[in-house]
Length: 459
Image 1 (tube, helix red, strand yellow):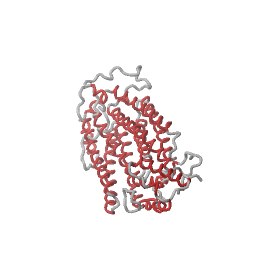
Image 2 (image 1 turned 120 degrees about the vertical axis):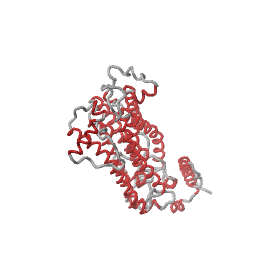
Image 3 (image 1 turned 60 degrees about the vertical axis):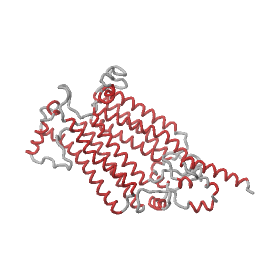
Image 4 (image 1 turned 135 degrees about the vertical axis):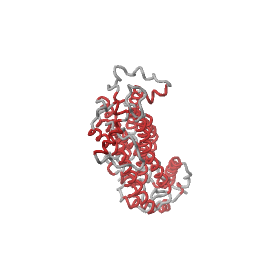
């Protein structure tokens, strides 16, 4: 009753359906029995993955394997509006492609603003400007504009432990520089709050924000508002008298790590959400490429956790001024492992407060990160994956190598402001690349999987 060609077609379609069922964990057994004509009508819509293809058009530098063909990229707005009509594709933004584009630009802009806050925070810390303002108001305050006002602020600072032990004899002109650095950091953060709230209110009023997106953005806004409180909580610890007369005043490493980690978390949340708005589906144009992306995902997740852990350990290096000790590499002084790495009691304190241990931890984690990223890059070279995914993996490898080089250079140069700031920015950039990689290899929707061919069609 059935010819050999029909049986072969049936087996091929059964195999594809089994793969889809394995990916999404849902019953797709009816797929092989659907008639091609019926299936063509059922899936007569633009492939949502083309959105991702358009977004990654600049990543197409990697040569496509012989016999493969990547479909021509369609207009972004056309694809979004067409894909949104299908019931399986749940967009975070309503109101059509223009609304989606506007919200995406706003979120990417907010993420970039947070990135600049992290860079400015690094500059403030490395220039020792963070303790120049000895009080804090939630609503902010005007800077001193007269000579009398400047003298009053300077007198407040002269009562602080940092002035008495570090900056004794500082002139008022020098004080003005560190004051403006800290004031600029605080006001830049408040400006970010305004820049976030006003468009958010407008998009809510227009009905563009879905409930799911609204809840996510509300959490991120709450974290941003709390970041100011965490910042003052951190600064306040540096205004207290040090435990001994030989200690230099500095903020608590725990509070600095909390402040920096919170900033990283806000940035990651904004960047991931922006990607989800403009790329509702990952770049996936064949089941073969989806299989390859699934394999990459299993490798990328643990590497991402290691990158994040290394960034947090870097916050403790900054909090303990550990970069100013053991300015040699690869050895720490004359030894590989300092003798005092476990001298604090209880033992756990060494990993957060002991300068030697904190720097050793960061060296080990940074080395492990570079090795893991290199292994990820090497293990995926022979995988059949989307060119965009391959390009992002190359970007991760390049950024990890640059970040390690920056770290070593910063250490050997006794932490100059320029290199120290670049190293802090590099940590966030590497996290950004890992987010981008995880976003491009996430699981496609069921409707997209059903519409994909086994391989990308050749010319």
